[in-house]
Length: 173
Image (tube, rainbow, N blue to C red; front, side, top):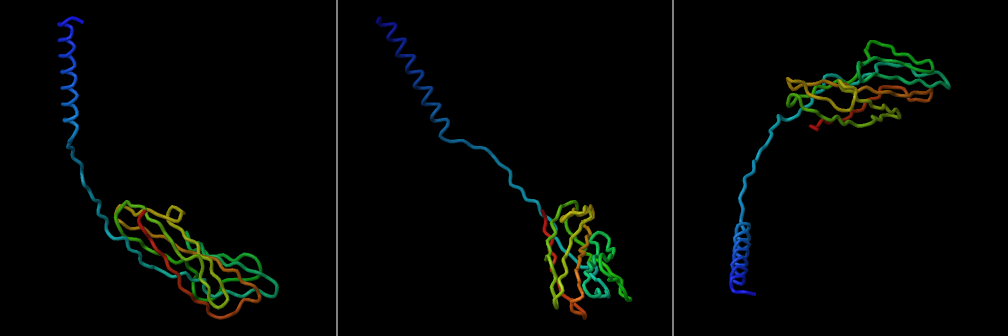
């Protein structure tokens, strides 16, 4: 190999080595920036407007079963099967709740599934404006929803006042 070629090859090797060393030093440290943020919501609250009331019902006669239902969506009362009827001065009504919080935000509704007292089980049914187990707070930060239920009675169901409480919880989604 001639001298000029050796010199050229040595120079090229030195340039490549120098570039690699500079490149390695340039990547040993780097800086960038990031953003920190937080979204703050009003606390979510729930208030009871009314209780779930079946009113007075007539226990079915021997051998018959009656299902009493209070609709969660509108509080409509119905009796199906047997010979039971709603009676008395107490108007059947759904439980109704108002949720307050950050406007436009979605929330979940969770409640107990049943209320049991004195041998009678009331099955609870939830409803929001959307008909689901959740809702969305309006622009003013409020929404209402209902809890209805159904109870099945037979001629063996114990008579008397049956009262029990249930919990309803709302949380932001």
